[in-house]
Image (cartoon, rainbow, N blue to C red; front, side, top):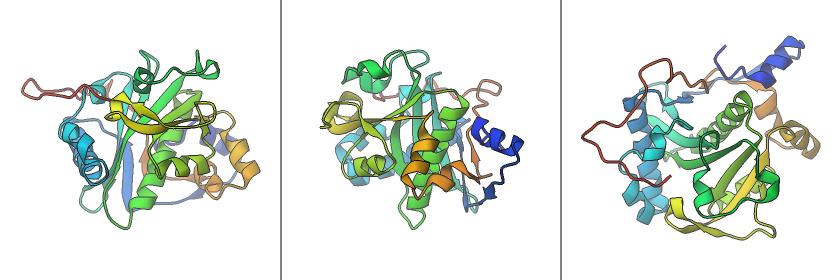
Length: 246
């Protein structure tokens, strides 16, 4: 098994609970080399150029947050030819505040909690886009489980915010609303959060269509292990310049 056999799935297997297994035409893993990171940047830039061209200008090269010890960059790659299909960056607050805290003061119920913010979601054009996005979110969820994160936090533009609402994310700002985020080009985003500990129970109670996919299906093609600390860590070359946004 790959590292996606996190605490949730390990408990199920130990208890003898049967899990279904699904394979896809692509893999999702942590970017571990400079080549991996540049693949992620390639698909990130292309996605933002389609949807937010004014921000994409800043995303042609890796950002400082991509190299941060508190961050990992996920990369979805086609098995056939290694082409990049999607990416997401996960930043935790283990070492410093989240990037979105430059623009918003978190409510009391998130203070003192371990948090992980997903940013720079980018999906390549094509028919696999929807499943790639769903698999990246599952990798994010299981990464949080494996690293004992209490809450996921995201900033989403319309209409993506409705998808997170459908996943049972809650508004961080009372009453909802959109906030310009400094690390997202001051574009208004809806800031939302999702509690990890209660996720399975809430999805089950709601009869969520992705409940089985997230909690009862083993995907060998997802690997959220971060082995960069054991191998040569990715890092910016002396000749490269990197933007400071998250």
